[in-house]
Amino acid sequence: MFSNALENFVATLNQKTPKELYEPMQYILSLGGKRMRPLLAYMGNDLFNGNPADVHPAALAVEIFHNFSLVHDDIMDNAPLRRGKPTVHEKWNNNIAVLSGDALLVKAYEELIKAKDKHIKPLIELFNKTALEVCEGQQLDMNFEKQPEVSTNEYLHMITLKTAVLLGAALQMGAITANASENDAKHLYEFGKNIGIAFQLQDDILDVFGNPQKFGKQQGGDIISNKKTWLLIEAKKQANGSTKEALNYWINLKEFNASEKVNAIKNIYETLQIRKQAEKEMNRFYELALQHLSEIKANENKKQELKVFAQALMNREI
Image (cartoon, rainbow, N blue to C red):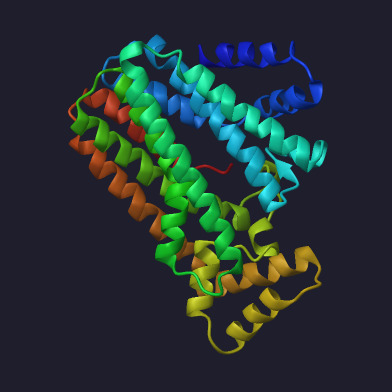
């Protein structure tokens, strides 16, 4: 049902002008992706035996909003690829990407207010809170680029806002449209948020150690840009002697061969067993998510479906 609705939404954009505004919107929404956030909205609704038609506007709004954030994030990160294809700003230009991203945000609200009257207020309140938190997270991420030192706790707070809260909100939106209790909706939100933190840690790991053809992004992009991920923060904290010297050399080097730098820092991560530690941290948040799931008063089989979904995220290659 959602795929058809998204296709219909994209088709409506094809009828609008100016093309320079609407074609990039079509493009980013047509690149595919996991559609994880709308799926979570539907699963949150189904967990409490809701009507899937009631959550549909929220599910579409969440996916449109997510793609809006990707368009803008890619500009700020100067990312060349998204889902294995040129990013919007690479295919067109920065100005077009900014404006088409803005238009996607407006379209997200257009879809959200199609929800049932009794659900609109709590949905918009949650959506607004989450959208602002995502922006806060992105600003913190940019602040970290100029901040000499970042702690792992600061990093975890940033990814909670930038990535995780939207997963929690998608699930809670589903719960709201199924008239779940406030306590159950809160636990479901916490489940999604902690899965989101684990998901981002997995994303950081895959950026370095994943297969770029499967991952759909430039391998080692975080390393090339000296992005302060959990892996780099821990490596800087733990490195000493010649390992610390090598790490600082590559971080401070202004001109370099990209693949050479990626391989060098990847080897440092291996020496320090950073990947193993990052996976342990990822699993800590995964287990915390499951604790919240266990507190929810709902059908155990449907809760198991959410658990299987979470397991699949933790075992992904893309």
